[in-house]
Length: 115
Image 1 (cartoon, rainbow, N blue to C red):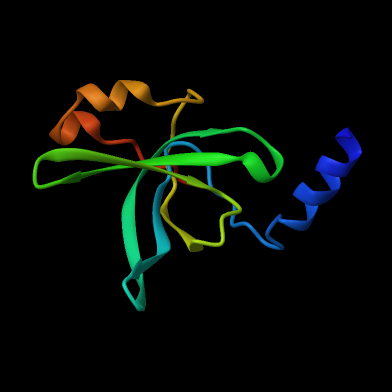
Image 2 (image 1 turned 180 degrees about the vertical axis):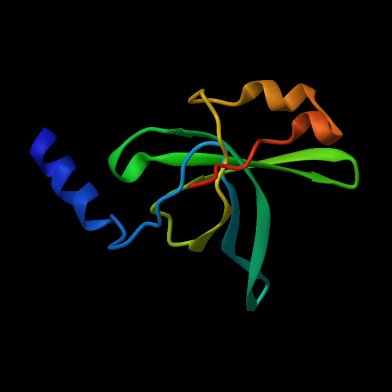
């Protein structure tokens, strides 16, 4: 039974997933369906966490919209997610940045990683 599930999951994996980490600022291009029309919507923010593995892997992105924090979680291998573009790399020392939820303005910034 376990091998059957693994076989099905392997078929659903995307061929290429861009390399991004927690703390990076990313643009997520997601397909939105409104009635009969389909369009691409961009969601830009900081990656708070990345969890799971294989085709169940998800990531959460947070941005401030009109002074209100908005978080969205997407599966990495979802057909809804067209593209993930890394805008800037963040220098962080944690796997999950939950502390950013309580911060606003400059305190919510993540230092840029210079390579």
